[in-house]
Length: 175
Ligand code: QAP
Ligand code: CO
Image 1 (cartoon, protein in one colour):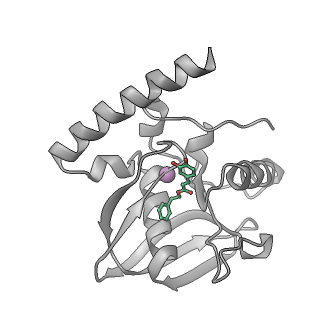
Image 2 (cartoon, helix red, strand yellow):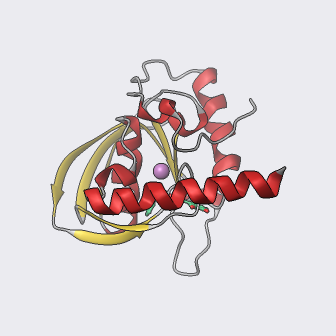
């Protein structure tokens, strides 16, 4: 399975992803193909819609204290649902689908997530900090929401201007 990352302003990133109801080889192949593309792109989280699959599937591999991301720290979440949320935390976010742009976003600090693993087993995770931010960012992708959609009107306008300029420069240096 050859995957590539969709970049804003690709309209597919606005799609609402569909629930998984079969925990078969097709799902496992998608999960297995998403992992190397996330790691080789220096990502810590990836939603399936970012690689053109509108399915409620996310991967997370949050760096540890030594800033490493061993494969055993990978978490695969199928059909994640945030059931509890409290507190506030602000963090400078980025996104593989919005390259080279980072901005402060405020989210819930503590969350509880219900999800399924690749075999369809029910899981429950209570988390905070970067993992909590990452889950909220990735669950937003499943609902067609990008972190730039959370910016104020003036910040968003500044983003659009900067991003378009950067994209033009990117094209010029490529060709
Ligand atoms: C979502 O984001 C996230 O622009 C995952 O040039 C964001 O992995 C989780 C990336 C904030 C927690 C906190 C972005 C890599 C990676 C870029 C990412 C880039 C290279 C973003
Ligand atoms: Co993202």
